[in-house]
Image 1 (cartoon, rainbow, N blue to C red):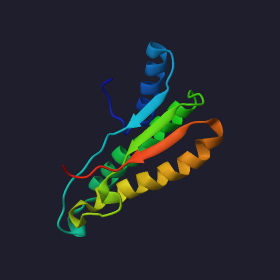
Image 2: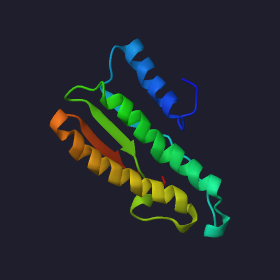
Image 3: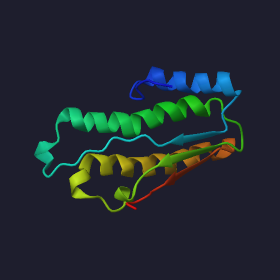
Length: 128
C-alpha cells in the first residue's frame, strides 16, 4: 500500500485496509527505517533528526496503536531494532538513538499488552 508511514492517518489506513481485505490482524512486523551517516553532530540537520524519528519511531507507534485495537489474545508484534541500540556507531547517531528507543518502546509495550495476551518482541540484527 503506497504512502508515507510518517503520517499517522496513513498508518491507520494501512491497518484498516489489512483488516478489510484479510479479515483481521494476528501479527504486526514493524521493519521500516531511515538511516544516514554523519561524522559530526553539527552535520545532522534538524530535518534529518526529525525524519529519522518520524520514520523509525513515530510510524511504529502509529501502526502499533492502530493494530492493537484489533488484535486478539495470541497475536504478536515484532519490532526491528538494531545492534546499534546496544552498541551505537557514532556515525549513525540519529539512527542508533531511535533503535535504542525501539527497544525501550517494545519492553514497555510487552508489559502493557501482557494482560491482553498480545506478545511484543524486538529483534536486533547486525551487519552480515
